[in-house]
Amino acid sequence: MSRIFALIPAAGMGKRMGAGSNKQYLLLDGMPILARTVSVFEAAPFIDGIYLVSPEQEIPFCHSEVVDRYGFSKVRSIVPGGAERQHSVCNGLDAMAGAAADDDLVLIHDGVRPFVSQQVLKTAADAAMQYGAAVVAVPVKDTVKVVRGGVIAETPPREELWLAQTPQAFRYGLIRDAHARAKAEGFLGTDDASLIEHQGGEVRIVTGVYRNIKITTPEDLVLAEAFLKGKG
Ligand SMILES: Nc1ccn([C@@H]2O[C@H](COP(=O)(O)OP(=O)(O)OP(=O)(O)O)[C@@H](O)[C@H]2O)c(=O)n1
Ligand SMILES: C[C@](O)(CO)[C@H](O)COP(=O)(O)O
Image (tube, rainbow, N blue to C red; front, side):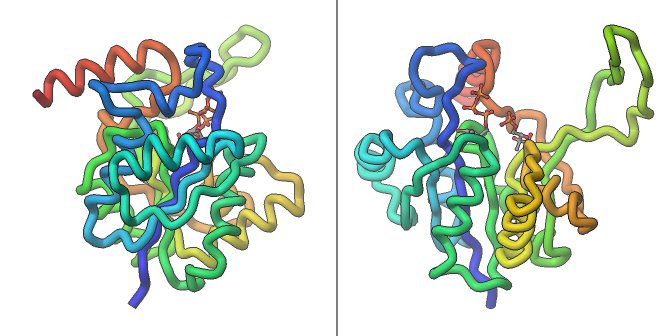
């Protein structure tokens, strides 16, 4: 029976948020964004363990203000991050090596997507169990233009365009090897699925929800507060 782990990269600097402190610790209705995200995985009965990735100097803070403060018993380790998201995820996968078998699943999820639901976690895990690699995504709502030199070069057919979110779920051995190969070849992607695509592998899309936003810029905080009020 495969076990299911969560790997949550939270080692970014939040430059686009411009908050002067790391955005993963900004409070949403009194609770840090990262703690909200971890709480969804902690509550999922099928998640066996959680690995967090944090800037090295913030690991003690992450321990006290997230893991201990909210009593997250499934967190197994807080791993130091790297310069890019891909490096942070790679460090997390390396740290799991002693615990995860090749056939186990890992759900990789941005620490700053706190509105992911139990249903979405389950859908992603089920798809990865069946196909080996699955990404949660939503269809684009707008018309997308490819622009070169300030001029529209192309208008791709909208029905082919999806916005990749997280979780992105994989067999542990598959994504570990894809990260190792990307590192060896100097390939840098903005998500984990692109590393499988880069080596010619197939990744399934599962339909997510628009509400699963990545908190990136100040407008996203307004949206996040509105989601929380709506819930209340
Ligand atoms: N070196 C990095 C960069 C990003 N992340 C994490 O990857 C997720 C998605 O990244 P993003 O929203 O781009 O966060 P930042 O890199 O912090 O944002 P920015 O690019 O604005 O600095 C976040 O949970 C972030 O903490 C990470 O673990 N390590
Ligand atoms: C993984 C991701 O959240 C999928 O949308 C995204 O690619 C992260 O990108 P960023 O460059 O770290 O914002």
